[in-house]
Every structure is written in structure tokens, then in C-alpha cells.
Image 1 (cartoon, helix red, strand yellow):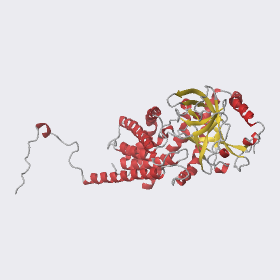
Image 2 (image 1 turned 60 degrees about the horizontal axis):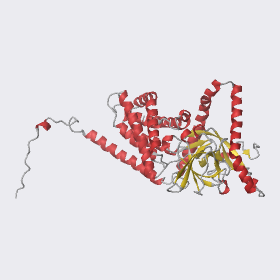
Image 3 (image 1 turned 90 degrees about the vertical axis):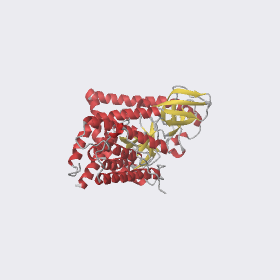
Image 4 (image 1 turned 90 degrees about the horizontal axis):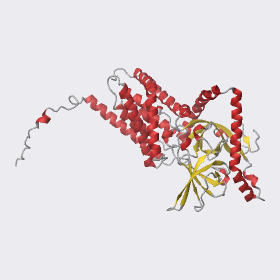
Length: 169
Length: 323
């Protein structure tokens, strides 16, 4: 069962990455696309808690850092998504998560993820945008993620809940 | 000697009713959970920091380059496959709005238009070049090169603040790092790294991209730096080597070219000057260049390779022959 869980989580992340780099650029606004990987990590955090989500975030971030069009320092998205997994995991509730909490968590995670990524870029002297660009990217990606939340999160959360080990809650 | 015992001070009335938010002390289970989480977070963050330190200077010397390559050869074909599935769907809009014939006419006109525009854009440069090279064997510069056609299959997200794309031609198609990528409008970028079937291209609008440019009208040389935007915000900054000369609005910029044509071959149109800012204090001129290429809608591109390169697909030679 454990291997099935890992396989499903990995498959979700791969699909998210392909959607992000190969499909959604066709409808992107100035190259800003929804962060599907971040949405998967947030879904995992709300279902399974911070430990699982941070680990999944590390894997997803590593994939984002290494898969083809990426050309930044490896570990930047990994760190951003580890933090996102942890922060979103703290919002997990023992009962069914209310819709408002889900949306608020996605918005906060989107903000935190992009900010951590931008900050590491600043520290490492990697590609950094101007502050105006940064704010635009932050806001537009946040809007994208919140808009896509009702389409992505319920399905992913249901799938992860079904795979949850019995008695984990 | 006895130490004086701390006196018990009366608890203020307000605080007497205070209850901690958590009901009762944590169970040992919860405490174990928390310490497990803490050690896992510590391990994950440490792993991220280690990776960043190892990869501090991305490029050929990085110890993580093999991992990048391995990931590229796995994900490249997946991206190419997805892109070929999605392309008919994104093209559907255009197909619905016009009949097949109209569509073909539009495509033909558009390609002629862009050819003429490119011709007009470089004509001044070419006149100057012709005058300069008169009596010399100037043709050798443009001969001996061929184009490998490729399609853009994946875009790096703008959230990553770097402008890179994946194309579906790799080392099997004869593409090597540091080769020029262009499309029918002008310069697109250069190849960063290749896998057998795909290559990663750094667009010239990326903030880390620097291209040697030449003003077509005055033949002055300078450096173009990307500003990191796509679409309308995708502009470049031009700084001329000779600070006394200012480019005029509307001037065309072409590539200066490098030794051996790597990473950029010379004479490829880049863009047009849209604004010039002069800083009196630093006595320097900064010109804003609007590129000819629409970076938000890249599709078919060509990679400049040496003539006679062995490739898994048709190579367009300098004289227009398909090989």
C-alpha cells in the first residue's frame, strides 16, 4: 500500500509538471502559468499533514529544478515547496477541510512559495526580476492558483484520502 | 545558611481563570510526532541547501549537470509528446475562424510579410556591410551554415524568473550547446544544453542573456541585455561600447557575431530601437530594443549548425536546399 501511495503521488507530480511546462503556456498570461506542482503539494498537506507534504514538496521541487526548460540553481523550487508543504500542513484539520480554508491555504501557499523562490534567487545571485515584475508575477500566479483550486484540489484530495492508511486520522 | 525561599506572590485575579488553549499536556505520542516532523523538516531543508551549494554555478562544471541531463532525456520526449497532442487543439481556434484556403493564404502572406520586413530591417546594415567588405571575400561568413528546424515544446514558467524553452531537436539532430536559435522574424536565443532528443534554449529576453549587437545604420557595436519579460514587456537594453554615439529611434539592431559563430552568428536581426535614455551623470546611453520575435508565441524555430551536419531530420542548407 505504501508503494502505491508513493507511486500515485509521484504520478500526480509528473502530470502537474507536464501541464505546467507543456500545456498551459498556450493560455499563459505573459508566461505566468498556474503552479500545478504547488497545488498538488497543498492538497497533500491538507490530507496527510506537514511531514508527508514537505517530503512530496521536496520531490516535486527537485523535478521542477531539473526537468528541461529549467536553468536556475537546483534546490530553489525544492526549498520553496518544502516550506509550502510544511506551512500548508499546519492548516490540516481532523474533520473535513472547509472550502474557505482550502482557498485561503492555496492563496497563502502561492504567496509563500513564490516569495521563498525569489528570496533564494536574491541570496544566490541567480536570475532575479525587478520588484515590479516580482509583484506582478506574485499576484497573477496567486490568482491563477486560486482560480484552478476548485478544478484541481477536490479530485486530488479525494484520491489522496482514499489512499490514506486506515486509522491515520 | 538557608537560602530565602521565593515568596509566593498572589496570582492576579485576571489570570486566575486563564486556561491554556490546548486541553491538558501533550501525550507522548504527539510529542514523538512533533520531534519526528522537526527532524524530517531539518533533513529536507538541509538537503535543499546542499543542492543549492553544489549547483551554485550552473553550467558545464556543476556536479548536478548529469542529473539535469538524465532528467532531460526522460522528460524531453514526454514534453514533446504532450506538445504534439496539444498543438491541434490550440490550432483549432484558427481553423474554425477561416476556411482552409483562407488560412493557407494568410499563412503565405504572413511569411512573405515577415521575410520582407526582415529584408527591409537589415537592408541598411547590408548596404553598410557591403561597402565595408568590398573587395574582400565576404560571402564566406554566411556560407557554410545550415538550419535544423525544430518546434518549441515547453516553456519555463515565468514564476522561475528565467526565460527558457525546450525544443524538440537534440544531439541526434546535430544540435550542440552554444548554437544560435532563430525564427523567421529574427534572433530567438542560444542553446544551453542538449539531450539526445531535446535541447534547452536561453531566450535573449532572459535577464542573464547578453548578446553582442550592432546598430544597422551606424555599424556601432554594443551589448544587449534581456529584461526578463515576455510579450509586450519582453524588451532588451542596448548599451553601446562607444558611449558618445546614441542610436536613433527606429534603428535596427542585428547580431554582431562571435568567434566561430558561437554562441551567435552575425547579421541576424534582433529588434528595433523604441526609446533612448541618456544619463548625463554617467555619460552613458541606454536604448530600449523591442525584439522582432514574439516570445510569447514561439513555435517553429531553426538552430544554426555547421553545413553538412549529420542529422536525424531534413537540414536546410544556406542556399535553401533541403538535405
